[in-house]
Image 1 (cartoon, rainbow, N blue to C red):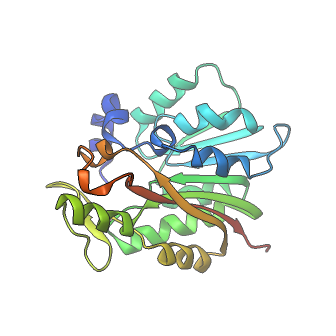
Image 2: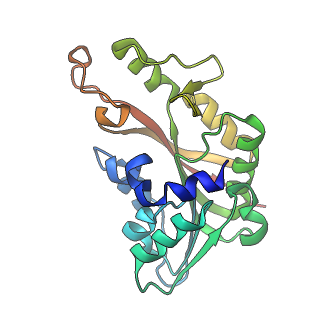
Length: 234
Protein backbone atom coordinates (compact mmCIF):
# COMPACT_ATOMS: atom_id res chain seq x y z
CA UNK A 1 0.00 0.00 0.00
CA UNK A 2 1.17 3.51 -0.82
CA UNK A 3 0.93 5.70 2.29
CA UNK A 4 1.77 8.85 0.33
CA UNK A 5 -1.08 8.18 -2.09
CA UNK A 6 -3.61 7.79 0.72
CA UNK A 7 -2.35 10.93 2.44
CA UNK A 8 -2.89 12.84 -0.82
CA UNK A 9 -6.49 11.60 -0.90
CA UNK A 10 -7.24 12.46 2.74
CA UNK A 11 -9.33 15.53 1.90
CA UNK A 12 -11.69 13.59 -0.36
CA UNK A 13 -11.39 10.23 1.41
CA UNK A 14 -15.12 9.94 2.17
CA UNK A 15 -15.97 10.49 -1.51
CA UNK A 16 -13.38 8.02 -2.77
CA UNK A 17 -13.83 5.19 -0.30
CA UNK A 18 -16.94 3.05 0.06
CA UNK A 19 -18.36 3.49 3.57
CA UNK A 20 -20.77 0.66 4.32
CA UNK A 21 -21.77 2.09 7.71
CA UNK A 22 -23.15 5.10 5.81
CA UNK A 23 -24.61 3.37 2.72
CA UNK A 24 -26.22 0.31 4.35
CA UNK A 25 -29.75 0.34 2.91
CA UNK A 26 -31.53 -1.86 5.44
CA UNK A 27 -29.86 -1.20 8.81
CA UNK A 28 -28.03 -4.52 8.86
CA UNK A 29 -24.85 -3.03 10.34
CA UNK A 30 -26.85 -1.62 13.27
CA UNK A 31 -28.51 -5.00 13.79
CA UNK A 32 -25.18 -6.83 13.95
CA UNK A 33 -23.67 -4.30 16.34
CA UNK A 34 -26.78 -4.54 18.53
CA UNK A 35 -26.30 -8.30 18.84
CA UNK A 36 -22.98 -7.78 20.67
CA UNK A 37 -23.22 -7.24 24.42
CA UNK A 38 -20.91 -4.32 25.20
CA UNK A 39 -20.68 -2.53 28.51
CA UNK A 40 -20.09 1.23 28.25
CA UNK A 41 -18.29 0.91 31.58
CA UNK A 42 -15.62 -1.59 30.54
CA UNK A 43 -15.72 -2.80 26.92
CA UNK A 44 -13.11 -2.12 24.26
CA UNK A 45 -13.68 -1.40 20.56
CA UNK A 46 -10.85 -1.69 18.05
CA UNK A 47 -11.62 -0.34 14.58
CA UNK A 48 -9.03 -1.61 12.11
CA UNK A 49 -9.07 0.60 9.04
CA UNK A 50 -11.14 3.27 10.77
CA UNK A 51 -10.89 5.82 7.95
CA UNK A 52 -12.24 9.18 9.07
CA UNK A 53 -13.92 7.63 12.10
CA UNK A 54 -17.51 7.21 10.89
CA UNK A 55 -18.09 3.87 12.66
CA UNK A 56 -16.55 5.16 15.89
CA UNK A 57 -18.63 8.32 15.69
CA UNK A 58 -21.84 6.30 15.29
CA UNK A 59 -21.24 3.46 17.75
CA UNK A 60 -18.39 4.57 19.99
CA UNK A 61 -20.69 5.65 22.84
CA UNK A 62 -21.35 1.98 23.54
CA UNK A 63 -17.72 1.36 24.54
CA UNK A 64 -15.49 2.46 27.40
CA UNK A 65 -12.27 2.47 25.41
CA UNK A 66 -11.67 2.74 21.66
CA UNK A 67 -8.65 2.24 19.42
CA UNK A 68 -8.79 3.51 15.85
CA UNK A 69 -6.16 2.24 13.42
CA UNK A 70 -5.53 3.74 9.99
CA UNK A 71 -2.68 3.53 7.50
CA UNK A 72 -2.30 7.22 6.63
CA UNK A 73 -1.60 10.01 9.11
CA UNK A 74 -3.69 12.67 7.32
CA UNK A 75 -6.74 10.39 7.38
CA UNK A 76 -6.22 9.82 11.12
CA UNK A 77 -6.02 13.61 11.51
CA UNK A 78 -9.44 13.93 9.86
CA UNK A 79 -10.83 11.23 12.18
CA UNK A 80 -9.56 13.08 15.23
CA UNK A 81 -11.17 16.28 13.99
CA UNK A 82 -14.45 14.48 13.29
CA UNK A 83 -14.59 13.06 16.82
CA UNK A 84 -13.81 16.41 18.40
CA UNK A 85 -13.16 16.30 22.12
CA UNK A 86 -13.57 12.53 22.60
CA UNK A 87 -11.04 11.46 25.21
CA UNK A 88 -11.54 7.70 25.19
CA UNK A 89 -10.08 7.12 21.69
CA UNK A 90 -6.47 6.18 21.00
CA UNK A 91 -5.47 6.79 17.38
CA UNK A 92 -2.74 4.68 15.80
CA UNK A 93 -1.19 5.32 12.40
CA UNK A 94 0.09 1.97 11.23
CA UNK A 95 -0.32 -0.97 8.88
CA UNK A 96 -3.31 -3.10 9.86
CA UNK A 97 -1.17 -6.22 9.69
CA UNK A 98 1.06 -4.88 12.47
CA UNK A 99 -1.70 -3.64 14.76
CA UNK A 100 -2.02 -6.73 16.95
CA UNK A 101 1.63 -6.46 17.99
CA UNK A 102 0.90 -3.05 19.50
CA UNK A 103 -2.67 -3.46 20.73
CA UNK A 104 -2.67 -7.09 21.88
CA UNK A 105 -5.80 -9.25 22.41
CA UNK A 106 -7.94 -6.54 24.05
CA UNK A 107 -11.02 -5.99 21.93
CA UNK A 108 -14.49 -7.02 22.98
CA UNK A 109 -15.38 -6.02 19.43
CA UNK A 110 -12.92 -5.67 16.56
CA UNK A 111 -14.36 -4.09 13.42
CA UNK A 112 -12.85 -4.28 9.96
CA UNK A 113 -15.20 -3.02 7.26
CA UNK A 114 -14.22 -3.43 3.60
CA UNK A 115 -10.51 -3.32 4.40
CA UNK A 116 -9.19 -6.86 3.76
CA UNK A 117 -9.38 -6.47 -0.02
CA UNK A 118 -5.74 -6.55 -1.13
CA UNK A 119 -5.07 -8.66 -4.25
CA UNK A 120 -2.06 -10.06 -2.38
CA UNK A 121 -2.92 -13.29 -0.56
CA UNK A 122 0.07 -12.85 1.76
CA UNK A 123 -1.04 -9.36 2.75
CA UNK A 124 -4.59 -10.55 3.37
CA UNK A 125 -3.33 -13.36 5.63
CA UNK A 126 -1.45 -10.82 7.75
CA UNK A 127 -4.60 -8.72 8.05
CA UNK A 128 -6.81 -11.64 9.03
CA UNK A 129 -4.24 -12.73 11.61
CA UNK A 130 -4.15 -9.22 13.06
CA UNK A 131 -7.95 -9.10 13.34
CA UNK A 132 -7.96 -12.39 15.25
CA UNK A 133 -5.06 -11.48 17.53
CA UNK A 134 -6.54 -8.08 18.39
CA UNK A 135 -9.79 -9.73 19.53
CA UNK A 136 -9.72 -11.15 23.03
CA UNK A 137 -10.76 -14.79 23.58
CA UNK A 138 -14.58 -15.00 23.42
CA UNK A 139 -14.64 -11.47 22.00
CA UNK A 140 -16.21 -10.69 18.62
CA UNK A 141 -15.09 -9.47 15.23
CA UNK A 142 -17.45 -7.66 12.87
CA UNK A 143 -16.31 -8.05 9.28
CA UNK A 144 -17.56 -6.67 5.97
CA UNK A 145 -15.99 -7.75 2.68
CA UNK A 146 -16.95 -7.40 -1.00
CA UNK A 147 -19.12 -10.25 -2.25
CA UNK A 148 -18.02 -12.39 -5.21
CA UNK A 149 -21.60 -13.51 -5.74
CA UNK A 150 -22.83 -9.92 -5.85
CA UNK A 151 -20.11 -8.91 -8.26
CA UNK A 152 -21.10 -11.76 -10.58
CA UNK A 153 -24.69 -10.46 -10.49
CA UNK A 154 -23.46 -6.95 -11.32
CA UNK A 155 -21.33 -8.35 -14.15
CA UNK A 156 -24.29 -10.21 -15.64
CA UNK A 157 -26.70 -7.26 -15.64
CA UNK A 158 -24.31 -4.38 -16.28
CA UNK A 159 -21.39 -5.96 -18.18
CA UNK A 160 -18.93 -4.85 -15.49
CA UNK A 161 -15.50 -6.51 -15.18
CA UNK A 162 -15.84 -10.21 -14.38
CA UNK A 163 -14.10 -11.45 -11.23
CA UNK A 164 -11.26 -13.89 -11.77
CA UNK A 165 -11.60 -17.42 -10.40
CA UNK A 166 -9.65 -16.21 -7.36
CA UNK A 167 -12.10 -13.36 -6.83
CA UNK A 168 -9.84 -10.54 -8.02
CA UNK A 169 -11.52 -7.64 -9.83
CA UNK A 170 -9.84 -4.76 -11.62
CA UNK A 171 -11.54 -1.66 -10.22
CA UNK A 172 -9.73 0.86 -12.42
CA UNK A 173 -6.41 1.25 -14.22
CA UNK A 174 -4.51 1.22 -10.93
CA UNK A 175 -6.48 -0.84 -8.43
CA UNK A 176 -7.42 -4.49 -8.08
CA UNK A 177 -9.58 -5.80 -5.24
CA UNK A 178 -10.38 -9.14 -3.66
CA UNK A 179 -14.03 -10.29 -3.58
CA UNK A 180 -15.10 -13.22 -1.35
CA UNK A 181 -17.47 -16.12 -1.74
CA UNK A 182 -19.62 -16.72 1.33
CA UNK A 183 -18.13 -20.12 2.18
CA UNK A 184 -14.63 -18.77 1.50
CA UNK A 185 -15.11 -16.03 4.10
CA UNK A 186 -16.35 -18.47 6.73
CA UNK A 187 -13.40 -20.79 6.10
CA UNK A 188 -10.90 -17.91 6.19
CA UNK A 189 -12.19 -16.74 9.56
CA UNK A 190 -12.18 -20.27 10.95
CA UNK A 191 -8.55 -20.74 9.93
CA UNK A 192 -7.68 -17.85 12.25
CA UNK A 193 -9.71 -19.08 15.21
CA UNK A 194 -12.81 -16.97 14.50
CA UNK A 195 -16.06 -18.93 14.52
CA UNK A 196 -18.92 -17.44 12.50
CA UNK A 197 -21.99 -16.68 14.59
CA UNK A 198 -23.98 -14.78 12.00
CA UNK A 199 -23.48 -13.97 8.33
CA UNK A 200 -25.64 -12.14 5.82
CA UNK A 201 -25.89 -9.56 3.08
CA UNK A 202 -25.48 -5.85 3.59
CA UNK A 203 -27.08 -4.07 0.64
CA UNK A 204 -25.90 -0.77 -0.82
CA UNK A 205 -27.03 1.55 -3.63
CA UNK A 206 -26.24 0.87 -7.27
CA UNK A 207 -24.56 4.27 -7.38
CA UNK A 208 -21.69 2.77 -5.35
CA UNK A 209 -21.02 0.57 -8.38
CA UNK A 210 -20.94 3.68 -10.56
CA UNK A 211 -24.22 2.63 -12.16
CA UNK A 212 -27.84 3.63 -12.40
CA UNK A 213 -30.09 0.78 -11.30
CA UNK A 214 -30.50 -1.59 -14.29
CA UNK A 215 -34.11 -2.38 -15.17
CA UNK A 216 -33.38 -6.10 -15.34
CA UNK A 217 -32.58 -6.42 -11.63
CA UNK A 218 -36.05 -5.62 -10.26
CA UNK A 219 -35.71 -4.94 -6.52
CA UNK A 220 -32.22 -6.40 -6.22
CA UNK A 221 -29.26 -4.37 -5.03
CA UNK A 222 -25.56 -5.19 -4.85
CA UNK A 223 -24.31 -6.38 -1.48
CA UNK A 224 -21.28 -7.18 0.61
CA UNK A 225 -20.94 -10.00 3.11
CA UNK A 226 -21.28 -8.98 6.75
CA UNK A 227 -20.17 -11.46 9.37
CA UNK A 228 -20.07 -11.51 13.15
CA UNK A 229 -17.52 -14.03 14.38
CA UNK A 230 -16.39 -15.04 17.86
CA UNK A 231 -12.81 -15.74 18.75
CA UNK A 232 -12.51 -19.20 20.24
CA UNK A 233 -11.38 -19.36 23.85
CA UNK A 234 -7.64 -19.68 24.35
